[in-house]
Length: 121
Image (tube, rainbow, N blue to C red; front, side, top):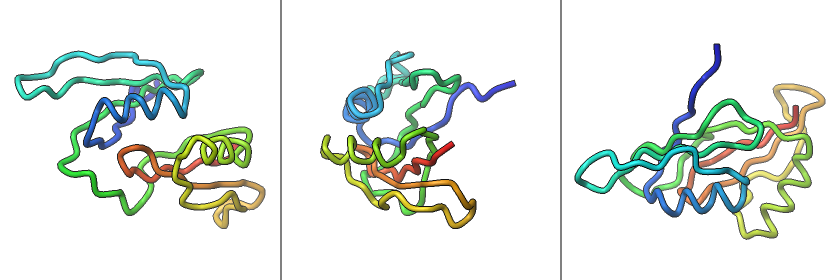
């Protein structure tokens, strides 16, 4: 058994699609109309992942207070530097995770203000 998709709250689907494609290397798995108001069913696929990211409607563009997704990466510091160079907001610099000795984590925000955790394997 595996999770089919993880939901991400977004205000602007096109802006979010561009962010996830440009900065995280995602590909569009699905982009289909969902109703008369212009909202679409959008799923983005992370390379090598079995779980797609699905955009759900958020009423405003207010940044999230807490993390909405945890991504695992082999090079947290390197990824943070790449994201920073691409203009992505880094919330927390790479550091030791207080909840798990030997694990590194950092946080960044996506185009929609979602706070994301990037953690080592």
